[in-house]
Length: 146
Length: 177
Length: 113
Image (cartoon, rainbow over all chains, first blue to last red; front, side):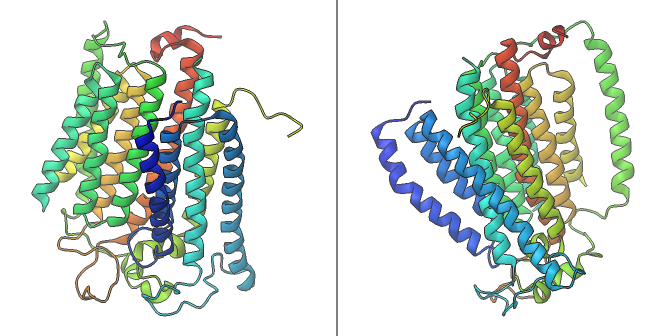
């Protein structure tokens, strides 16, 4: 796939970090406002997809990105399991997903116990998954349809 | 309120009908976008802002992927007419539609009318902010009351990604790397 | 009630597309339409008239009714899974195109073995 013109590239350079920052904001504030891990993860993936679309796809570098994305996704799923397993461990093997951190007051940023941690982990997982799917579908199909 | 919902739903039905009957695959995909973005408006009208955010992004990414697929392959719709078995198919379709409407009528008989839902079981979830400490009640349900479902969802997403890579990759990775 | 019937009609249109159409891309679009209609139906069941979005805030009075958060939480995960499964179907369609050179399932049917 080829890249686009210099105008699109320049706008992408300006806009992609802003979109990325907004995705991080949605993930972190997931327990206070609409959004959360799923929505924020898809926004982060949209920032990456915008870059790939405007700058074109160079196959070797994208292969390297894909290895890192798979590593990120596996680590995120493992992190989700570790958080839930810690709850199991601290509840002396009776409650899975125990909320073992202090919950704080409702409405503060630092509240909710393990819910913000799970939001971050799920956001990373969704972002890695959707970006990997997009890279695979746009890059490898060039090889397949030759 | 219900009137707006009916208008958007009629628009979605028209979009889906055009999408299935279009001669060009690109216009089929674009009019499929009507259904997805109409769904976003429905979610906003039904007071579900979380779902509206996720749906609008997922719809955009789905359209990008579909257009990338048909740009590299073909845009022609191959089958436009009707073949010999069309008459039998039409009769079977009418019978099945009547049957489905009967089942649907039986099914929705136990439901209350639109907008008069009784939160029998969900009262515990609605009081849940004191239990989970999360102001967004949907996040409280997803990550605390029903976290097992979220774990399963993560597993399904991981499996789908592995499946896409397995189907599309032509050559396996080299051994030395 | 008419809202439920329209939603069901959307589901039937998706089913018609899956059964009648011979093009793989059209079949995938029909499956996605069916999935959307089911999502919309479940959210409609959980709606309460004049209800508020289930988010607690200082400005929002806590006396008013909230809509049911349980269907919203379930559909939230279902939407993201739907994207992943649709891409898996598209990947299989691309491989079939690379092998047979067409999206027509009648021609793909002819080659057995």
